[in-house]
Image (cartoon, rainbow, N blue to C red; front, side, top):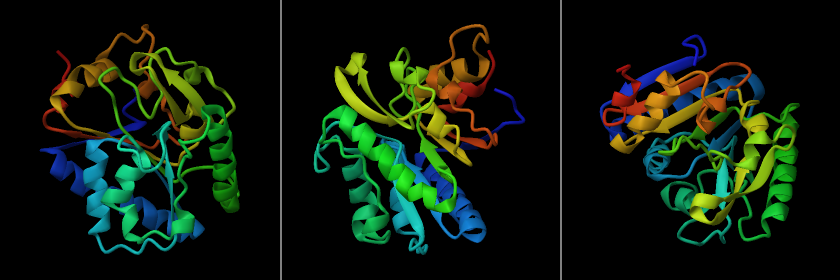
Length: 244
């Protein structure tokens, strides 16, 4: 990863990471609202983003011109315990601060291929109003295997070159997922990775110091064409940034 394309911010713990990420999201929103009058944000699942969503809910920000999308979703109904939509709703969106019509969930209860098609149509309809089908900011996480969104190592979704959304079967989890694809993520104006926990050390080390000739981890393939990628990493994960 070129340092010219990547910014790394180290925070002491997940709480500090969430607070700093909240500031970063609001900064991106301010910029988008000034330039285009609307802010399009894609959410990530996981425990670290949940802290961020709670921080946003308590921030006092005006969300009236925000549109909230999702980077991926489990193939479950919206009220299911595994649903990313449910998690985000409980932490933030359920408070009604973002207008309901501006919250664009993936319909995980549908047949996977249909859910992917429907969500792509939803993205085009929502984002296309600004003239380009591009997210202003995509929030992403990092799995211990280097996956991000639901783009897992070896997934056929990694080879997608045109569709913005894909249904993918995650063999290691024996589960169907719906995910934004690399073409969609790499059109984002900015990407913010949130990484916390000592279990992420090896994945970070491979991402930043691994063999450049080896097959890259999925997260390494997220390369927005404008080159604005920020990694926020807590102290437990930061050892993976050190070259041994």
